[in-house]
Length: 110
Image 1 (cartoon, rainbow, N blue to C red):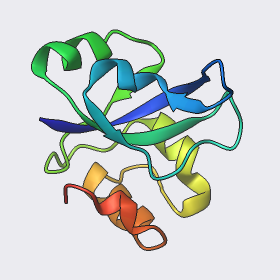
Image 2: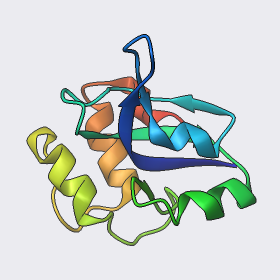
Image 3: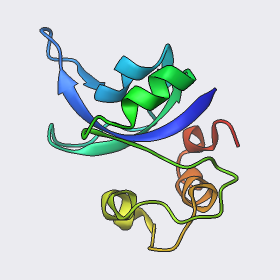
């Protein structure tokens, strides 16, 4: 299964920035990294039910609802992408569609 997650990032020994949520999946796509080390960003992760369950208890990762779920995304997503026109009350499909207007990478899995 594939899921979008809002993830914190870390740097490895070479200084390369990676999303924390890669610990909970096999493959990932990250359309944009946060500008600062303390930032968050949306990451599309190929995961399993067991890995997803583990990700849900990691405070550095927010597992987002399915793109067909009409519920609004968490406020942390709104806060992270407010500059891109994301507002409270938007569901994940609406968020990805809006972000996809400027970067088609966000339309993965839609």
